[in-house]
Image (tube, rainbow, N blue to C red; front, top):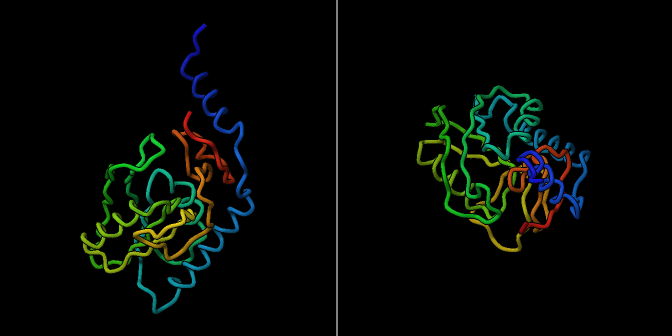
Length: 193
């Protein structure tokens, strides 16, 4: 009897977690978000800080980080999003694709970019350059996680929640083949299947 699509996806998602290795639990994740929020508040919640920065979430991976971080920020801001990717459904980087360009005007503004992970850095380097090309005065990068890949990256984040080992990870917005963004902690999985 053939499996229907729901059974296929459930079984594939479960198979990914079969030998998964826990990296950070939910408590460590929340502590990291608190730390990034505290650092951003220290920089932007004061009289001499740039007024009303534009916060841009990089979808879809940053959706969880954005949603939880925004409620911890104590300064006035405007929120918008962009959707830019190198991965799609693959587990290897590829051509950068802009699916949604921010609708908000970035010209002359301080822009805070929120992303789930700084992996090889190509995507965020491209985003930062593009925002400056669009007229941003300053671009601040805040990432939930920075992956330690053992080599220099074309961009560094200004604020980092957690440093991850050089493994394929899922949870807290990061996915494998579209699965497991919803996990409250971080898990390393084996890919290729």
